[in-house]
Length: 152
Image 1 (cartoon, rainbow, N blue to C red):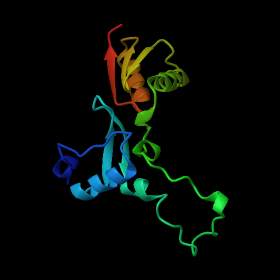
Image 2 (cartoon, rainbow, N blue to C red):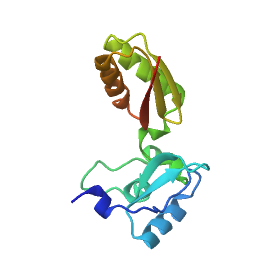
Image 3 (cartoon, one colour):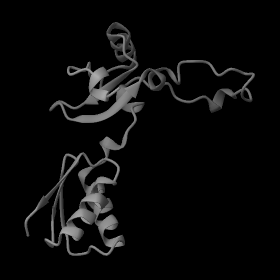
Image 4 (cartoon, one colour):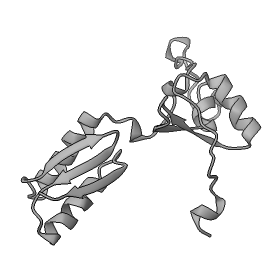
């Protein structure tokens, strides 16, 4: 079975400022277990699962853990942005730093890196082996959504 055979082309999404209760209601209505979190421009910023949404609303089973003291209880989160996961929320500056570090660590210091909304443009030597290595180093950085090699 391929992913495209079970995926939807029009996913139900939420914004970071959506309340946890509203996201739970939406997931139940849509019969899904996770919701993509998108910004006002429709860019993916994270994923929120039902488990993320309810984790601080379900009492801890005292048989599994030491009973919590009242001062040790976690804050109850109200917004999707407080419980969503994924590194897609990484800033472009952080991605730029991490990609430069990855390239430097493998000896590719002569590359120019530009990042915009997780999309990476790399400019450097035209040697095919170096191009392949630079692309591979960049795509392995968590949060990178695409890599494009530009002619130097």
